[in-house]
Length: 463
Image (cartoon, rainbow, N blue to C red; front, side):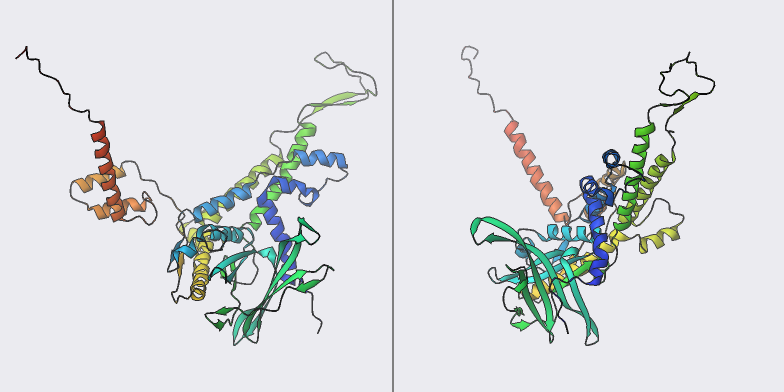
């Protein structure tokens, strides 16, 4: 059996990496899109390099993709994730690089939105004496193997690729970037880690002997590497919510280039003459053209098909963005159609929220086990994507009910909390204490503003 090189990329990776790159480019924006020129904006037939340069310069890539993704993330993290039964200090520095659980998983959610694939490695720091998490992009997971073990599909090998800065041996001020690999694998049901690096001769060599991580003195019988997708922890590859959106955005970009190109050549009235040759000819109301010649004006139509197509794609992207965030498009025929859309392919943000909740709960439970705790962690990401404003007059109505004795303070607080008037996790006791503190401060402020009594000496002559 021939051993393949460590940096071998599996077929699934090779079949999808271009899709991931295109989606990332589309979200990154105009700079990278134009930098790749003909990859995203093909040359027109017969177009010269100079002509294409102008064509490319006039094109405009309006980044609807990034705006939609950021709006989706904003909705998902409008309320901070709730993390129960995990050490608070570790939650505030989940990756030992200063990132809190909230910010770490915001980046995870972003990766799921863009390419629908991100890996999380659960590891242990001997120096810090605690577990931590490290995230790996889809492009970093270059190879993996899944086998059936005891009737269950289990990942038995994962190869991760990355970069590392190495100080030059001959010049301590010179730093060069080199490729590194981390191999995670099961051998006879036991988890091992093997690090690799590119050697001086160009070959790939092991950094050290394989390491057998232990959890509370016991070996792992699984690889603590979790690939998160919109359908939960899943090693299979599927397109992200943003793939079709970016493709539509790139089509809009091409239409924009054609439209701007048309305006460039025919936006101003252009005179086309026949029969004049190199002779000058008069222009104006008294112009006299020869019988065998003539002239006409060429100008772009304001209602051109290209302009209509631009508007059409913008409407499609608006509808698609609505579907991603709320699970409902702009055109809903019936309540049944709405229900099917919400539960089907368009419930993208809801899918991601549930996936993150389930995946993070499992990961953080394993995290607890390595930290010496038997607690099962429970993580909940926001799944409420609708914001409500208090209707005009509603607050007065509720307050009147409280003042008249027809509504308790508890019910009043519950009603206002439904409109997100109070901070997340805010309780009635918190609110009553805050009101009490506010009243004390108002009294103190009023006392400070009260002028002192005037000390007027009596005039003995008046007495």
